[in-house]
Length: 498
Ligand code: SF4
Image (cartoon, rainbow, N blue to C red; front, side, top):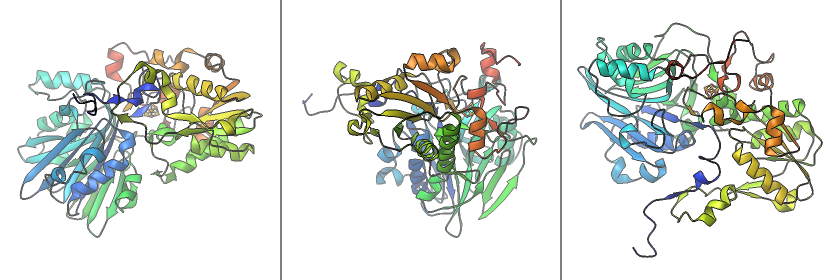
Protein backbone atom coordinates (compact mmCIF):
# COMPACT_ATOMS: atom_id res chain seq x y z
CA UNK A 1 0.00 0.00 0.00
CA UNK A 2 1.33 3.45 -0.86
CA UNK A 3 2.10 5.53 2.21
CA UNK A 4 -0.35 8.14 0.87
CA UNK A 5 -3.29 5.75 0.84
CA UNK A 6 -5.69 5.85 3.77
CA UNK A 7 -5.81 2.81 6.05
CA UNK A 8 -8.44 0.20 5.25
CA UNK A 9 -10.69 1.13 8.20
CA UNK A 10 -11.73 4.65 9.10
CA UNK A 11 -10.83 5.57 12.63
CA UNK A 12 -13.73 6.85 14.67
CA UNK A 13 -12.80 9.84 16.79
CA UNK A 14 -16.30 9.74 18.25
CA UNK A 15 -15.30 6.62 20.13
CA UNK A 16 -12.50 8.39 21.97
CA UNK A 17 -14.28 10.58 24.42
CA UNK A 18 -16.04 7.96 26.49
CA UNK A 19 -15.90 4.27 27.19
CA UNK A 20 -18.28 3.69 24.34
CA UNK A 21 -19.10 6.75 22.29
CA UNK A 22 -19.33 10.28 23.62
CA UNK A 23 -21.17 9.52 26.87
CA UNK A 24 -24.42 10.99 25.61
CA UNK A 25 -27.78 9.43 25.01
CA UNK A 26 -28.46 9.17 21.30
CA UNK A 27 -31.70 9.45 19.41
CA UNK A 28 -31.97 6.45 17.16
CA UNK A 29 -33.74 7.71 14.07
CA UNK A 30 -35.15 10.52 11.98
CA UNK A 31 -37.86 10.19 9.32
CA UNK A 32 -38.86 12.41 6.41
CA UNK A 33 -41.30 12.20 3.49
CA UNK A 34 -42.43 14.42 0.60
CA UNK A 35 -45.29 14.21 -1.91
CA UNK A 36 -46.28 16.49 -4.76
CA UNK A 37 -42.93 17.92 -5.84
CA UNK A 38 -40.68 17.11 -8.79
CA UNK A 39 -37.71 14.93 -7.80
CA UNK A 40 -38.99 14.38 -4.28
CA UNK A 41 -35.92 12.29 -3.36
CA UNK A 42 -33.71 15.39 -3.60
CA UNK A 43 -35.91 17.10 -1.00
CA UNK A 44 -35.82 14.00 1.17
CA UNK A 45 -32.01 13.94 1.00
CA UNK A 46 -31.89 17.56 2.19
CA UNK A 47 -34.40 16.83 4.94
CA UNK A 48 -32.41 13.83 6.12
CA UNK A 49 -29.27 15.95 6.11
CA UNK A 50 -31.01 18.37 8.51
CA UNK A 51 -32.03 15.38 10.67
CA UNK A 52 -28.54 13.85 10.70
CA UNK A 53 -28.16 14.59 14.44
CA UNK A 54 -30.87 11.93 15.00
CA UNK A 55 -28.80 9.18 13.40
CA UNK A 56 -25.43 9.06 11.67
CA UNK A 57 -24.89 5.37 11.08
CA UNK A 58 -26.85 4.94 7.87
CA UNK A 59 -29.61 6.38 5.73
CA UNK A 60 -32.06 5.29 3.07
CA UNK A 61 -34.57 6.69 0.59
CA UNK A 62 -37.45 5.03 -1.31
CA UNK A 63 -39.16 6.88 -4.15
CA UNK A 64 -42.00 6.09 -6.52
CA UNK A 65 -42.25 7.01 -10.16
CA UNK A 66 -45.08 5.77 -12.44
CA UNK A 67 -42.56 4.87 -15.15
CA UNK A 68 -40.03 2.91 -13.12
CA UNK A 69 -42.06 1.94 -10.03
CA UNK A 70 -40.54 1.86 -6.56
CA UNK A 71 -36.81 2.53 -6.26
CA UNK A 72 -34.64 2.50 -3.19
CA UNK A 73 -31.11 3.24 -2.04
CA UNK A 74 -29.64 2.45 1.37
CA UNK A 75 -26.15 3.47 2.43
CA UNK A 76 -23.92 3.53 5.50
CA UNK A 77 -22.56 6.88 6.60
CA UNK A 78 -23.62 10.48 6.36
CA UNK A 79 -26.36 11.66 4.01
CA UNK A 80 -24.02 14.29 2.53
CA UNK A 81 -21.49 11.60 1.54
CA UNK A 82 -24.05 9.46 -0.29
CA UNK A 83 -27.24 11.19 -1.31
CA UNK A 84 -25.52 14.14 -2.96
CA UNK A 85 -24.20 12.02 -5.83
CA UNK A 86 -26.07 12.70 -9.05
CA UNK A 87 -25.57 9.14 -10.23
CA UNK A 88 -27.37 7.83 -7.12
CA UNK A 89 -30.11 10.46 -7.01
CA UNK A 90 -30.97 9.78 -10.67
CA UNK A 91 -31.98 6.28 -9.60
CA UNK A 92 -34.65 7.73 -7.27
CA UNK A 93 -37.10 9.54 -9.59
CA UNK A 94 -40.66 10.60 -8.84
CA UNK A 95 -42.83 13.06 -6.97
CA UNK A 96 -43.16 10.89 -3.86
CA UNK A 97 -40.34 9.73 -1.58
CA UNK A 98 -39.63 8.88 2.04
CA UNK A 99 -36.35 8.51 3.92
CA UNK A 100 -34.78 7.50 7.19
CA UNK A 101 -31.55 8.16 9.10
CA UNK A 102 -30.49 5.61 11.65
CA UNK A 103 -28.27 5.48 14.71
CA UNK A 104 -28.87 1.83 15.49
CA UNK A 105 -31.89 -0.12 16.58
CA UNK A 106 -32.42 -2.37 19.54
CA UNK A 107 -30.96 -5.81 19.14
CA UNK A 108 -28.34 -4.99 16.54
CA UNK A 109 -25.98 -2.50 18.13
CA UNK A 110 -22.53 -2.55 16.67
CA UNK A 111 -23.49 -5.02 13.96
CA UNK A 112 -25.73 -3.12 11.62
CA UNK A 113 -26.07 -4.68 8.20
CA UNK A 114 -27.31 -2.85 5.14
CA UNK A 115 -30.48 -4.96 5.33
CA UNK A 116 -31.25 -3.25 8.69
CA UNK A 117 -31.29 0.17 7.04
CA UNK A 118 -34.73 1.66 6.44
CA UNK A 119 -37.11 2.43 4.75
CA UNK A 120 -38.41 -1.14 4.56
CA UNK A 121 -40.43 -2.11 1.52
CA UNK A 122 -43.15 -4.71 1.06
CA UNK A 123 -44.92 -5.84 -2.10
CA UNK A 124 -48.52 -6.66 -1.15
CA UNK A 125 -51.38 -8.03 -3.21
CA UNK A 126 -52.83 -4.52 -3.61
CA UNK A 127 -49.47 -2.88 -4.39
CA UNK A 128 -46.21 -1.91 -2.75
CA UNK A 129 -45.63 0.14 0.38
CA UNK A 130 -42.55 1.44 2.17
CA UNK A 131 -42.22 2.44 5.82
CA UNK A 132 -39.72 4.37 7.92
CA UNK A 133 -40.01 4.17 11.72
CA UNK A 134 -38.67 6.37 14.49
CA UNK A 135 -39.04 4.91 17.97
CA UNK A 136 -38.82 1.47 19.49
CA UNK A 137 -41.32 -1.37 19.63
CA UNK A 138 -41.31 -2.69 23.18
CA UNK A 139 -43.05 -6.00 22.31
CA UNK A 140 -40.98 -6.64 19.16
CA UNK A 141 -39.45 -9.90 20.46
CA UNK A 142 -42.85 -11.39 21.18
CA UNK A 143 -44.26 -10.20 17.84
CA UNK A 144 -41.25 -11.53 15.94
CA UNK A 145 -41.58 -14.97 17.57
CA UNK A 146 -45.27 -15.10 16.75
CA UNK A 147 -44.76 -13.95 13.16
CA UNK A 148 -41.94 -16.43 12.53
CA UNK A 149 -44.06 -19.27 13.93
CA UNK A 150 -46.75 -18.29 11.42
CA UNK A 151 -44.35 -18.32 8.49
CA UNK A 152 -42.94 -14.79 8.20
CA UNK A 153 -39.35 -14.65 6.95
CA UNK A 154 -37.48 -11.70 8.44
CA UNK A 155 -34.75 -9.99 6.43
CA UNK A 156 -33.29 -7.79 9.18
CA UNK A 157 -32.71 -7.64 12.92
CA UNK A 158 -34.74 -4.43 13.19
CA UNK A 159 -37.80 -4.23 15.42
CA UNK A 160 -39.40 -2.04 12.74
CA UNK A 161 -39.63 -4.91 10.26
CA UNK A 162 -42.43 -6.38 12.40
CA UNK A 163 -44.69 -3.62 11.04
CA UNK A 164 -44.23 -4.80 7.44
CA UNK A 165 -44.97 -8.42 8.39
CA UNK A 166 -48.02 -7.44 10.42
CA UNK A 167 -49.22 -5.44 7.41
CA UNK A 168 -48.71 -8.48 5.19
CA UNK A 169 -50.90 -10.60 7.48
CA UNK A 170 -53.72 -8.04 7.64
CA UNK A 171 -56.88 -8.88 5.72
CA UNK A 172 -57.68 -5.23 4.99
CA UNK A 173 -57.76 -4.21 1.32
CA UNK A 174 -56.05 -0.83 1.52
CA UNK A 175 -52.60 0.09 2.80
CA UNK A 176 -53.70 2.70 5.39
CA UNK A 177 -56.05 0.13 6.97
CA UNK A 178 -53.28 -2.48 6.95
CA UNK A 179 -50.96 -0.02 8.68
CA UNK A 180 -53.67 0.59 11.28
CA UNK A 181 -54.08 -3.16 11.83
CA UNK A 182 -50.33 -3.57 12.21
CA UNK A 183 -49.79 -0.65 14.56
CA UNK A 184 -52.65 -1.68 16.83
CA UNK A 185 -50.57 -4.78 17.65
CA UNK A 186 -47.46 -2.75 18.38
CA UNK A 187 -46.50 -1.47 21.84
CA UNK A 188 -44.02 1.29 22.56
CA UNK A 189 -43.11 4.41 20.63
CA UNK A 190 -43.57 4.98 16.94
CA UNK A 191 -43.60 7.87 14.55
CA UNK A 192 -44.02 6.22 11.16
CA UNK A 193 -43.79 7.70 7.67
CA UNK A 194 -45.07 5.42 4.92
CA UNK A 195 -45.80 5.62 1.20
CA UNK A 196 -47.72 3.76 -1.49
CA UNK A 197 -47.81 4.62 -5.19
CA UNK A 198 -50.10 7.56 -4.54
CA UNK A 199 -50.16 8.24 -0.79
CA UNK A 200 -47.86 9.71 1.84
CA UNK A 201 -48.91 8.48 5.29
CA UNK A 202 -47.81 9.58 8.76
CA UNK A 203 -48.74 8.02 12.12
CA UNK A 204 -47.84 8.73 15.74
CA UNK A 205 -48.38 6.30 18.59
CA UNK A 206 -51.27 7.06 20.98
CA UNK A 207 -48.93 8.70 23.52
CA UNK A 208 -47.04 10.67 20.86
CA UNK A 209 -43.67 9.78 22.42
CA UNK A 210 -41.59 10.66 19.36
CA UNK A 211 -42.18 13.79 17.25
CA UNK A 212 -43.63 14.08 13.73
CA UNK A 213 -44.65 17.33 12.02
CA UNK A 214 -46.52 18.30 8.85
CA UNK A 215 -45.32 20.95 6.40
CA UNK A 216 -46.42 22.43 3.07
CA UNK A 217 -44.14 23.14 0.15
CA UNK A 218 -45.22 25.00 -2.98
CA UNK A 219 -48.84 24.85 -4.11
CA UNK A 220 -49.25 21.07 -4.09
CA UNK A 221 -46.48 19.64 -1.94
CA UNK A 222 -46.75 18.11 1.53
CA UNK A 223 -43.97 17.13 3.89
CA UNK A 224 -43.73 14.90 6.98
CA UNK A 225 -40.66 15.26 9.17
CA UNK A 226 -39.33 14.33 12.59
CA UNK A 227 -38.49 17.98 13.23
CA UNK A 228 -39.26 21.41 11.86
CA UNK A 229 -35.57 22.22 11.21
CA UNK A 230 -35.79 19.82 8.24
CA UNK A 231 -38.77 21.76 6.84
CA UNK A 232 -36.72 24.94 6.94
CA UNK A 233 -33.88 23.51 4.85
CA UNK A 234 -36.23 22.83 1.89
CA UNK A 235 -38.23 26.04 2.30
CA UNK A 236 -41.36 24.23 3.53
CA UNK A 237 -43.82 25.87 5.87
CA UNK A 238 -44.59 24.25 9.25
CA UNK A 239 -48.32 23.52 9.39
CA UNK A 240 -48.78 21.53 12.61
CA UNK A 241 -47.70 18.41 14.48
CA UNK A 242 -49.22 15.03 13.64
CA UNK A 243 -51.15 14.61 16.86
CA UNK A 244 -50.59 11.70 19.23
CA UNK A 245 -52.65 8.75 17.99
CA UNK A 246 -53.35 10.42 14.64
CA UNK A 247 -52.85 8.99 11.15
CA UNK A 248 -52.64 11.44 8.26
CA UNK A 249 -53.12 10.21 4.69
CA UNK A 250 -52.05 12.66 1.98
CA UNK A 251 -53.19 11.95 -1.59
CA UNK A 252 -54.04 14.12 -4.63
CA UNK A 253 -53.11 17.28 -2.70
CA UNK A 254 -55.50 16.58 0.19
CA UNK A 255 -54.80 15.56 3.79
CA UNK A 256 -57.17 13.22 5.58
CA UNK A 257 -56.93 12.82 9.36
CA UNK A 258 -57.84 9.48 10.96
CA UNK A 259 -57.89 8.24 14.57
CA UNK A 260 -57.06 4.54 14.54
CA UNK A 261 -56.27 4.09 18.25
CA UNK A 262 -58.05 4.33 21.58
CA UNK A 263 -57.54 7.86 22.92
CA UNK A 264 -54.79 8.24 25.54
CA UNK A 265 -53.19 11.07 27.48
CA UNK A 266 -50.09 12.20 25.53
CA UNK A 267 -46.63 11.48 26.99
CA UNK A 268 -44.18 13.20 24.63
CA UNK A 269 -40.49 12.53 25.32
CA UNK A 270 -39.31 15.38 27.55
CA UNK A 271 -35.68 14.67 26.61
CA UNK A 272 -36.43 15.93 23.08
CA UNK A 273 -36.66 19.37 24.67
CA UNK A 274 -33.45 18.90 26.68
CA UNK A 275 -31.12 17.41 24.14
CA UNK A 276 -32.29 15.36 21.14
CA UNK A 277 -34.04 17.90 18.96
CA UNK A 278 -32.13 20.67 17.24
CA UNK A 279 -32.39 24.02 19.04
CA UNK A 280 -33.81 25.65 15.90
CA UNK A 281 -36.76 23.24 15.86
CA UNK A 282 -40.26 23.97 17.17
CA UNK A 283 -41.88 21.27 19.32
CA UNK A 284 -45.57 21.48 20.11
CA UNK A 285 -45.47 25.17 19.22
CA UNK A 286 -42.48 25.84 21.55
CA UNK A 287 -39.00 26.85 20.46
CA UNK A 288 -36.50 24.21 21.59
CA UNK A 289 -33.86 26.91 22.04
CA UNK A 290 -36.14 28.97 24.26
CA UNK A 291 -37.07 25.92 26.37
CA UNK A 292 -33.39 25.10 26.89
CA UNK A 293 -32.64 28.70 27.84
CA UNK A 294 -35.52 28.53 30.34
CA UNK A 295 -34.08 25.31 31.81
CA UNK A 296 -30.93 27.34 32.58
CA UNK A 297 -33.07 30.01 34.26
CA UNK A 298 -34.80 27.38 36.44
CA UNK A 299 -31.46 25.77 37.25
CA UNK A 300 -29.99 29.09 38.38
CA UNK A 301 -32.99 29.61 40.67
CA UNK A 302 -32.82 26.08 42.09
CA UNK A 303 -29.05 25.72 42.44
CA UNK A 304 -27.31 29.10 42.78
CA UNK A 305 -23.58 29.22 43.48
CA UNK A 306 -21.03 32.02 43.80
CA UNK A 307 -18.76 31.98 40.77
CA UNK A 308 -17.02 34.18 38.19
CA UNK A 309 -17.97 32.55 34.90
CA UNK A 310 -20.75 30.43 33.36
CA UNK A 311 -19.48 28.14 30.57
CA UNK A 312 -21.50 25.76 28.41
CA UNK A 313 -20.23 22.30 27.57
CA UNK A 314 -20.68 22.71 23.80
CA UNK A 315 -22.85 22.51 21.92
CA UNK A 316 -25.98 21.24 23.62
CA UNK A 317 -25.31 22.97 26.97
CA UNK A 318 -25.15 26.40 25.36
CA UNK A 319 -28.76 27.67 25.57
CA UNK A 320 -29.08 26.51 29.22
CA UNK A 321 -25.78 28.23 30.08
CA UNK A 322 -27.08 31.45 28.51
CA UNK A 323 -30.24 31.20 30.64
CA UNK A 324 -28.22 30.40 33.78
CA UNK A 325 -25.91 33.38 33.23
CA UNK A 326 -28.83 35.73 32.56
CA UNK A 327 -30.73 34.67 35.67
CA UNK A 328 -27.70 34.58 37.99
CA UNK A 329 -26.02 37.73 36.69
CA UNK A 330 -22.72 35.83 36.39
CA UNK A 331 -20.85 36.55 33.13
CA UNK A 332 -21.20 34.03 30.31
CA UNK A 333 -18.12 32.91 28.38
CA UNK A 334 -17.03 30.29 25.87
CA UNK A 335 -14.60 28.52 28.16
CA UNK A 336 -14.64 25.34 26.09
CA UNK A 337 -14.34 25.35 22.32
CA UNK A 338 -15.51 22.43 20.19
CA UNK A 339 -13.56 21.37 17.13
CA UNK A 340 -16.45 21.45 14.64
CA UNK A 341 -14.66 19.27 12.13
CA UNK A 342 -13.79 16.32 14.35
CA UNK A 343 -15.56 13.13 13.43
CA UNK A 344 -14.97 10.00 11.46
CA UNK A 345 -11.79 10.42 9.52
CA UNK A 346 -8.97 8.43 8.03
CA UNK A 347 -6.09 8.29 10.49
CA UNK A 348 -4.22 5.49 12.18
CA UNK A 349 -5.56 4.84 15.72
CA UNK A 350 -2.27 5.07 17.57
CA UNK A 351 -2.05 4.75 21.36
CA UNK A 352 -0.89 8.36 21.55
CA UNK A 353 -4.07 9.56 19.80
CA UNK A 354 -6.26 7.34 21.99
CA UNK A 355 -4.81 8.95 25.11
CA UNK A 356 -5.83 12.40 23.88
CA UNK A 357 -9.47 11.35 24.40
CA UNK A 358 -11.92 14.20 24.78
CA UNK A 359 -9.20 16.78 24.00
CA UNK A 360 -9.57 15.89 20.34
CA UNK A 361 -13.11 17.25 20.37
CA UNK A 362 -13.00 19.95 23.03
CA UNK A 363 -10.34 22.48 23.98
CA UNK A 364 -10.24 24.85 26.94
CA UNK A 365 -10.00 28.59 26.41
CA UNK A 366 -7.20 29.04 28.98
CA UNK A 367 -7.07 32.82 28.89
CA UNK A 368 -10.72 32.93 29.98
CA UNK A 369 -10.62 30.15 32.58
CA UNK A 370 -7.42 30.85 34.51
CA UNK A 371 -8.00 31.75 38.17
CA UNK A 372 -11.80 31.72 37.85
CA UNK A 373 -14.54 29.91 39.74
CA UNK A 374 -16.26 28.23 36.79
CA UNK A 375 -19.83 26.96 36.46
CA UNK A 376 -19.99 24.31 33.70
CA UNK A 377 -23.48 23.79 32.28
CA UNK A 378 -24.06 20.46 30.51
CA UNK A 379 -27.26 18.85 29.24
CA UNK A 380 -26.89 15.49 31.04
CA UNK A 381 -24.61 13.07 32.86
CA UNK A 382 -24.84 9.50 31.59
CA UNK A 383 -21.81 7.45 32.65
CA UNK A 384 -19.86 10.45 33.88
CA UNK A 385 -16.76 9.59 31.85
CA UNK A 386 -16.74 12.75 29.75
CA UNK A 387 -17.72 14.98 32.71
CA UNK A 388 -14.62 13.82 34.62
CA UNK A 389 -12.33 14.52 31.68
CA UNK A 390 -13.80 17.97 31.07
CA UNK A 391 -13.37 18.81 34.76
CA UNK A 392 -9.69 17.78 34.55
CA UNK A 393 -9.17 19.95 31.47
CA UNK A 394 -10.71 22.96 33.23
CA UNK A 395 -8.55 22.47 36.33
CA UNK A 396 -5.43 21.94 34.17
CA UNK A 397 -6.18 25.30 32.59
CA UNK A 398 -5.95 26.95 36.02
CA UNK A 399 -9.59 27.23 37.15
CA UNK A 400 -9.94 27.96 40.88
CA UNK A 401 -13.18 25.98 41.29
CA UNK A 402 -15.40 23.81 39.08
CA UNK A 403 -19.17 23.64 39.63
CA UNK A 404 -21.33 21.41 37.40
CA UNK A 405 -24.93 22.41 36.71
CA UNK A 406 -26.89 19.84 34.69
CA UNK A 407 -29.88 20.80 32.53
CA UNK A 408 -31.72 17.51 33.11
CA UNK A 409 -32.54 15.47 36.22
CA UNK A 410 -30.26 12.49 37.01
CA UNK A 411 -30.56 9.86 34.25
CA UNK A 412 -31.16 6.77 36.36
CA UNK A 413 -33.24 4.53 34.05
CA UNK A 414 -32.77 3.25 30.50
CA UNK A 415 -35.00 4.39 27.66
CA UNK A 416 -36.92 1.70 25.76
CA UNK A 417 -38.64 4.08 23.35
CA UNK A 418 -36.02 4.71 20.68
CA UNK A 419 -33.04 6.20 22.49
CA UNK A 420 -29.75 4.40 22.88
CA UNK A 421 -29.08 4.13 26.62
CA UNK A 422 -26.51 2.08 28.52
CA UNK A 423 -27.74 -0.71 30.78
CA UNK A 424 -29.08 0.61 34.06
CA UNK A 425 -26.03 -0.37 36.11
CA UNK A 426 -23.81 1.74 33.83
CA UNK A 427 -25.82 4.92 34.45
CA UNK A 428 -24.01 6.91 37.13
CA UNK A 429 -27.24 8.12 38.69
CA UNK A 430 -28.59 4.58 39.02
CA UNK A 431 -25.96 3.68 41.59
CA UNK A 432 -24.99 6.99 43.24
CA UNK A 433 -26.69 9.86 45.03
CA UNK A 434 -26.06 13.41 43.86
CA UNK A 435 -23.40 13.89 46.58
CA UNK A 436 -21.72 10.61 45.65
CA UNK A 437 -21.65 11.69 42.00
CA UNK A 438 -20.10 15.01 43.03
CA UNK A 439 -17.35 13.13 44.91
CA UNK A 440 -16.90 10.67 42.05
CA UNK A 441 -16.45 13.51 39.57
CA UNK A 442 -14.28 15.36 42.15
CA UNK A 443 -15.91 18.74 41.52
CA UNK A 444 -16.65 21.51 44.01
CA UNK A 445 -20.40 21.15 43.50
CA UNK A 446 -22.84 19.25 41.29
CA UNK A 447 -26.54 20.01 40.93
CA UNK A 448 -29.19 18.70 38.51
CA UNK A 449 -32.39 20.51 37.63
CA UNK A 450 -35.35 18.94 39.46
CA UNK A 451 -38.08 17.16 37.51
CA UNK A 452 -40.53 19.90 38.54
CA UNK A 453 -38.05 22.56 37.39
CA UNK A 454 -37.77 20.83 34.02
CA UNK A 455 -41.55 20.69 33.69
CA UNK A 456 -41.78 24.40 34.50
CA UNK A 457 -39.20 25.11 31.81
CA UNK A 458 -41.28 23.27 29.19
CA UNK A 459 -44.31 25.36 30.13
CA UNK A 460 -46.08 23.37 32.85
CA UNK A 461 -46.49 26.16 35.39
CA UNK A 462 -47.28 23.86 38.31
CA UNK A 463 -44.55 21.33 37.52
CA UNK A 464 -45.02 17.59 37.13
CA UNK A 465 -48.42 16.10 37.81
CA UNK A 466 -47.29 13.02 39.76
CA UNK A 467 -50.62 11.22 39.35
CA UNK A 468 -50.70 11.73 35.58
CA UNK A 469 -47.40 13.11 34.19
CA UNK A 470 -47.71 15.31 31.13
CA UNK A 471 -44.58 13.90 29.45
CA UNK A 472 -42.59 10.69 29.25
CA UNK A 473 -39.78 11.18 31.76
CA UNK A 474 -39.04 7.50 32.43
CA UNK A 475 -35.25 7.84 32.15
CA UNK A 476 -35.40 10.24 35.12
CA UNK A 477 -38.35 8.89 37.09
CA UNK A 478 -38.52 5.18 36.27
CA UNK A 479 -42.21 5.78 35.48
CA UNK A 480 -42.61 3.98 32.14
CA UNK A 481 -45.80 5.03 30.33
CA UNK A 482 -45.78 1.76 28.32
CA UNK A 483 -44.53 -1.33 30.13
CA UNK A 484 -41.41 -2.56 28.26
CA UNK A 485 -42.76 -6.10 28.00
CA UNK A 486 -39.80 -7.65 26.11
CA UNK A 487 -37.35 -6.28 28.67
CA UNK A 488 -39.51 -7.38 31.61
CA UNK A 489 -39.54 -10.88 30.08
CA UNK A 490 -35.72 -10.70 30.04
CA UNK A 491 -35.61 -9.83 33.74
CA UNK A 492 -35.68 -6.01 33.77
CA UNK A 493 -37.18 -4.84 37.06
CA UNK A 494 -39.52 -1.88 37.07
CA UNK A 495 -39.31 0.62 39.91
CA UNK A 496 -41.15 -0.58 43.01
CA UNK A 497 -44.38 1.30 43.75
CA UNK A 498 -43.84 4.09 46.31
S1 SF4 B 1 -37.38 7.37 28.63
FE1 SF4 B 1 -36.39 9.41 28.50
S2 SF4 B 1 -35.42 9.47 26.48
FE2 SF4 B 1 -36.88 7.76 26.47
S3 SF4 B 1 -38.78 8.58 25.62
FE3 SF4 B 1 -38.93 8.76 27.83
S4 SF4 B 1 -38.09 10.81 28.32
FE4 SF4 B 1 -37.48 10.30 26.24
